[in-house]
Structure formats: C-alpha cells, structure tokens
Image (cartoon, rainbow, N blue to C red):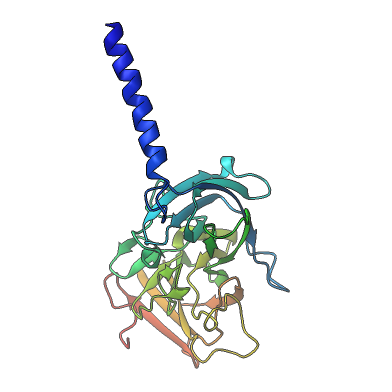
Length: 316
C-alpha cells in the first residue's frame, strides 16, 4: 500500500515537472496563457439635451467575450439586484485579444430570460419574438448595447470603460376620442427591425409592425395614452446612435389607431403618416384626435369597417 502511494506521488511530481519543462520551449507554444484580471466599467452615453423621459436605468446586464480565434470564452448575465451601483465588474480571462459585447435591459421571452450569444460577435443580434407574422410587441424598457476590443495579451492595462447606448426610441402617443369609441389600440409601422450589436446596424423589414396595445393607460373618459419603446425609424447614419444635425432622408413611418364604435358595432382604423424620424435614444411625443365621422386629411386614412385579418397597409 505504501509503495502504491509513493508511486502515485512520484507520478504527480513527474507530471508537474514535465509541464514545467514543456513550458521552456523557445516559442512557449505549450505554455498555458497567463490569466489577466480586468476591471470593466459600463458607461451609459447621455446625449446633450436628451429627453428625461427616456429611461437611463439598467435592469440587467449580459456580457460576452470572444478570443482572437473568434471563440466565445466567457458569457454571463446579471439581474438588476446583482448590478453594482457604479456598473463596474471584475473579469479574469487568459491573456488574449478579445471582442467584447454587452447588452442591457434585454427582453427576449415571456419570463424575461436572455438568449445565449452567438458563436461569433457578428451573430449577436437583439430581436423581439414575433406574436404574429411580422408583428412584435413594444418594449417597456429600452435595451442598450456596447462593444469594445480589448488587447490583454501585449498590454498591462487592467481597466476598460465600455460606452453603452440605447438601440431603440420612445413614443408617447396621446389619443383623444369620442366617448362612443372604445378599446383603443395602437400599432406602428415603418421602423427598423433587429439590431446587430457588433456591426452597429439594423435589419430592415418594411412589413414589420409593433403592437403597443399592452402599453395603454386611460388618462380620462375620452383620452388614452401609449408610452412604449420601439426600434427607431432610422439609425442616424453610420456609427451614430443619436439624431444628427441634418434630418434623415429615410424615416417616414405609420401610426395606426384602432377603436371599436359602439354605435355601428364596427372597428375603425385610422392611419397617420408621420414624416418625423425617430432616432435611437429620442422621444417622439404627439397628440392625435379620432372620430368615427372623420374626413381624411392629407396624410391620414380612415377605414370605418376594418376587420381583423385585413391587410395593415395594402400599399406596402
């Protein structure tokens, strides 16, 4: 028995020595990479004059690190109760060159869970699950995203600051209506779709509709409000997460207001064409009045006998 123990101890010692010797190769190819402790701080980008109604609070953080070979080596999520007040985290990883992506306030399923990141940074996309073909729900909180390249292999730098910016805009829609119009609902069309975090670009889907009905609240007997977050109608140009100095050419979108008329027993659809772009981080705020006897004005269409299943926009 003692001989077996001695043999085992010798085997372990030999393995350690062998590992040590193997790390004396001239190119150090067999040596494990040195681990580095990094301090990563997330900073929310606040644009000058940004509307205070746009929420700048984080409810979750989802971080991922891809090494130089493009392999996801570290991924972790933090709930709001786990977030440090200064949004500073300590991460220990082997020395390498990393592509880092962080998303915050993700709403990916009914339980508030997070989808796992893709196998490469370019695969990471913030999306919303469809509730019907080409229809998604509006968001209650705005998602944020940030990226950074970290070279810990040839640098002793241990602190990194990652700027995170909103990837959606906010809408505050007030609808004034007659007392005989009930069940007021709201949808928007003409926005961009999913957001690719690493490439800082949006998907385009001309048929996408965002349903904001769950975000409604009564503000009186004949006033209904909708406060929600949605993908922007324009990204503001390459690398811009805010409204540029010049107005974007692309940015027209549609606002759909639905109501049930208790007099006729029919559903009415009002379609408003909006030519004011909604940028990431911005708030669009407006008041609309609807009536069953409206006469269509420029930029407004009224369907007094709309039925579920009808095309949202037959022109598209």
